[in-house]
Length: 83
Image 1 (cartoon, rainbow, N blue to C red):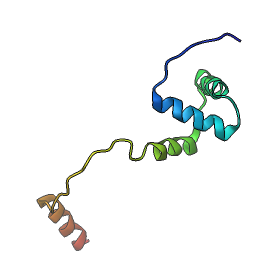
Image 2 (image 1 turned 60 degrees about the vertical axis):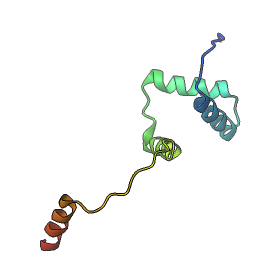
Image 3 (image 1 turned 30 degrees about the vertical axis):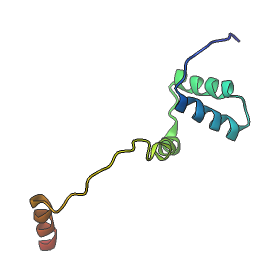
Image 4 (image 1 turned 60 degrees about the horizontal axis):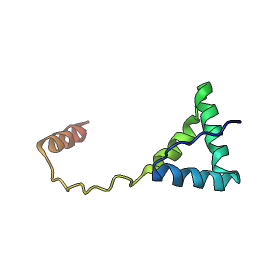
């Protein structure tokens, strides 16, 4: 094995530490596993993708203004009411 230094963002370090703790292995082992998956092009699967989406929920803290009914909304309500 060869030693390699990399720079990680704080969020990456936190997530690596969480994964390592959950798996009971060092952070370096998690990095090696993820790198191996990437190098062979392994699909991480829908469960992992959904987990990533769940983990990112609320990461972008912006306020979304409320919006009132628009002409489009009223039109769609009319269309669905006819059906």
